[in-house]
Length: 514
Image 1 (cartoon, rainbow, N blue to C red):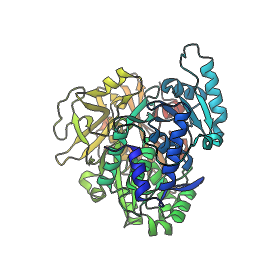
Image 2 (image 1 turned 180 degrees about the vertical axis):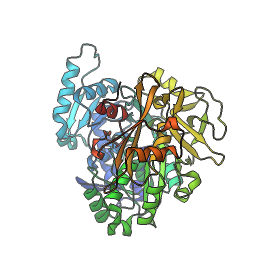
Image 3 (image 1 turned 60 degrees about the vertical axis):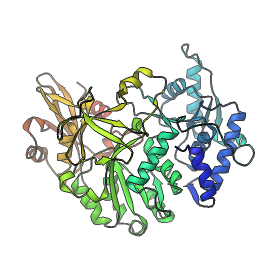
């Protein structure tokens, strides 16, 4: 199995003049990326950074960051993707856990890094060394020499650290190998035809410290020898401008972003009709009204829905564009990727659930994580007989389509009955006036928890609480119908940097923590 260093060398030979990365801060070809990666590799060794040691990176979406990723990977060191949205104390925690030999940071994060280092200096329990920090303006001084630099690394060696979202506690650093990244990239190319066309130009809209951007888009297009267009931030104007000026052919966005841009008329712009060939979405819910609307606006573009998690490398299943409008699998997260083996198991066992029976999604395959950094107990808990336990509840039909139901830890217990929030949200999304729907379990002395919902309506459309509750009741049992619906604006919903809804924060904002 190839390493990122192998792909760097192969693209240097195969696509030397083709653009690899394009962003606000520059355009570089595959040949230039390779030369600069080899120079950085030498510089890191000269600076004392050994293979297998972490280089922490605090940088936004940019060509600068993309080049760091390839250069650090080529050196045999580990790219530590720090979240630039962290507070100083959170960054200090990330540094403490990953123990980097070096930190490379954009100049705009000088104060944040300085504060984090000060926290570590005052931490009596911290026994590690304080890492050297190299800021953006000094990175060029690290680059040394010319020509190929070959590190003695294998596909099993660690490539990167990506931090989990931390919805259930302190974020954990997921260790992913070169084998994992290459396997995921090949799965994307084979199962989703991503980057497979020489003319593909993929637009990265989500933060590069998350696996969707770093592994599914940047790495996949790099392996395929295709171009990555890196947006500094997501907004409608930026998206339209980049699709038009850079002839973007594909992108990934979560469903709420997809609904937002459709409502704003972004996909109606001429550039999308001319260049755009595929939209990939996931990490949320997508139902038939939105799929039909997308197909109506862009009849010649493919639409894929995908499910995964960082620990799986990240992709597990995808609903192929050919199945997208099949009513029998509306709401499905699709079928396995090419090299992925997934099953629905009875939680805590390796007993395969019967078709239609609820269980937990387990995953095997070459793209799985090596483990959680310095957390052997957590790593052991995540696996059972070689299977990765996802913590996600689902059913699987006799055709092999998976249907996600809920996070195991977010299932609502109401009056002795299990209520799966996603099941209720799926029904709410079939109402034409609903743009966003969130279902939560709220403490209740009589019922343990009661089902409540938070609704964002589409522009110029109305719906009452009674109307929506009646809509749910047509499809679901009475105990699954939200007792209360709160109507809010889209900007009220708290989201992570990747755009994922933060349910615990939402409960707090509404005063629903009990």
